Length: 308
Image 1 (tube, one colour):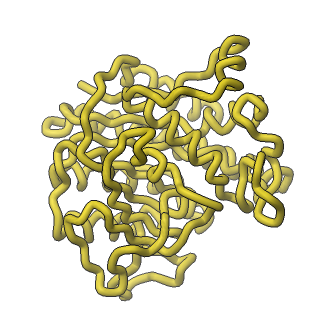
Image 2: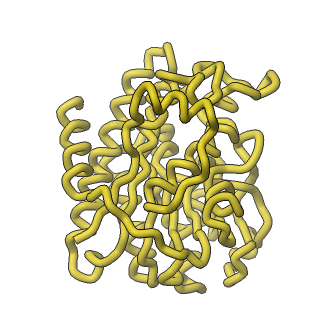
């Protein structure tokens, strides 16, 4: 498993040059699960999609405030409209067993359903930033990591076929470090699954990026696996005081995790910060405490880019 993870990281480093030019995006179109879900503001039971960039789908917030794509879209980051198709509990396939949504239900809310529903009625603007983040629910459902990784790449390919040119695909964080798995017999299994998924996803995306018709697109990776390790290794550098337990039952200030598996909105804000770096955009001015930490130790870079 360690060799597999190292292989995946080597693939990422080989196919992602560090340079990237800033792009003026028209909006963000987001797909995924509870890490991206920001609640119901658009139509769901009617399964309608339109071109209003302010519409959102989903079930609810799974944290104590805005999620990472909301921060990424706000005036302090990209300052663009957000269209959010993500649903909590979504697998990388079509279904959402956690929400009791499986075939033949016409609105089953998995990642493939989200993508097919959007592309079935709306093209993807070539100047939009498309985010695709899913995979954790496949682990929770006991599904293979290689198939989950392939499904994410398939979703990206479908969105590229519909006109998308710029993609931001976060890796899975180390699920084993979340409060629901940390210190349990399943911690090692969760960590290994996360690593293997990321390695296969990197390899799949590298293949996609080499294919004619897809080789001119941008495929940016946000290495949340490494970022979570950094946050836990030096929490004070990022303004956290508790990185191992849930903050849901207490005032969440200083907590990295909101519940057993989801980050707090403060952690989401850091995801947006490093997303800006990942896509080669000017990043917001970091907090003074982070500047002090950067003077002592360099952060592992999380910006990567697939290109021909």
